[in-house]
Image (cartoon, rainbow, N blue to C red):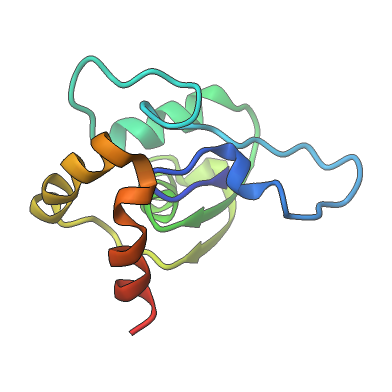
Length: 124
C-alpha cells in the first residue's frame, strides 16, 4: 500500500516501477485527487482506520510525509494487519498551526502555492 504525502494524489506514484502481478493500493485522502473534501474534521487515527478497513489481509505500508503518519497510526491501531512498514520524510504527527497557516495558499493555488516553501524546508 502506497500512502501519499499531503496535497498529492495517487498519481505521485506513477513513476514507480513495480513487479508484474503485484497488487498495490494507492488510497487517496479526503480532498486529494478525485476525492471530495471531508464534510467534518478528521484525524490521523480516522485516516488509518479507513485505510485498514478498505483493504483485507496483511498490509505492506509505504508512507511518505503525511502517508508516513497515517502508516504509523495504522501500525499502532492494527498491529496484526501490518507485515512491513517503510517510512520516509515523516514523524508521528504534524504541526496543526503550521498546517492551518499553509491552508489558504493551497486552497487558492493548489500545491503550487506551497512548492517553494516546501522545497526550502526539505532541502536546507
